[in-house]
Image (cartoon, rainbow, N blue to C red; front, side, top):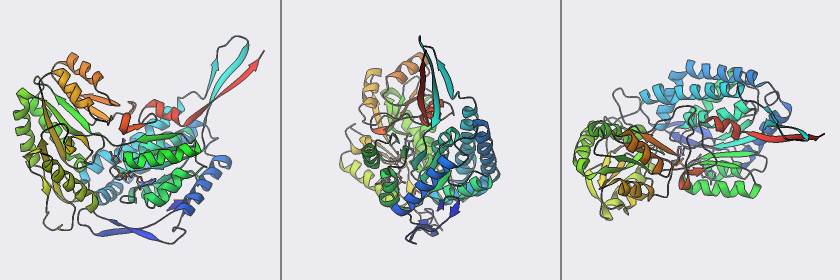
Length: 476
Ligand code: NAD
């Protein structure tokens, strides 16, 4: 773990194993932190915030540190990408070209934004001299999932750090390695001790202790709605504001005037990206009846060409899922879906990769059937999509909005006024047009309903989420 600028064992000296999902082998033993370690980390962050230089230094000086850190992430991109791929199972090209460069881009985006964010603004009211001042909160806690470990660390902590806060991170137990390496880079960048702390450990011990800690001033949780609820309850008891970025059951609506072949190939890509372990990806395909069979044919062809293999093997386009537990979850859903009456358009299920027999591989699946089916309603988090036909626009909107989730959907149509109209009718934090999984820095990414609350990430507002506002007033 990395606490107060020191590399330490857990207070209990215990550790847990981290495995390569591509062959099931143990690749690291990592300190199993718990409440005592969280206590130390929060205390270190609090000390750094109150007595260190970070919170009080000018925003442009902090930005220099964050740019230096971004440069180091770029310098060590190959190492970070290899670690991320080994830990999560995602193809090396995805880590190298996607996840890792995204981290440095996020650091730079918030570093630059913070330099141009006004900390003091006059308020024009008669009879008073008034202004508002924005200051960092103090210690911010972060709990992350395993699907995009370092990318989400970047999305989460960059605005908090740029605002002048100090952070305590609890990475997912399946994938803590790049977060630890990132601390090495933070050390090299000269970021003062106590500003970034990482406590590795299990969710029910280290994670719960962080969420329950009364010394944190904000908490950001990314993960499942079930755990999100527990975390929000803990924060509620301490009146700590919480940001929740939770699961999804994203839909893609494909109209008959869309470029159906291109949509089919893009959606096949969406469910195989990160082996379908993407919160916002298109797992419900709501398709105009007229083009459904064409869309399914092209998608099946694309999916059957997906090259499943170990993350580090050249030519792999889809790796394993992250753990045996996750593999059983995906297989369990496929079984339940069929038992509830879903028809199989493309049969997925277990997959064996030669030379990597211990890996957690599954093949992509396409199902169809009634919207009430469990596979149409619940987040599976694997390479699976559920296809549903529609007659008209109203039915398409109804099908999409029947979900309790509200993270992201997409609309595919050649008619941009229709696409824009429908995009606004879909109840979610994000609607994309003729694309799925789009995350430019500067565009807020958030969920509503079961998918989250608290403002989201990636937008300029996220920086303000980490600055508390204060009014200063003098009558005259
Ligand atoms: P999870 O909820 O099981 O775990 C997330 C984190 O919470 C892990 O670090 C875990 O150790 C910790 N945790 C577990 N129990 C805890 C407890 N009792 N108290 C505090 N922390 C605890 O989620 P997961 O399986 O790691 O990730 C998958 C989920 O994350 C999916 O639902 C996915 O949609 C969601 N997700 C959402 C976004 C988003 O931006 N909305 C992004 C990525 C993933």
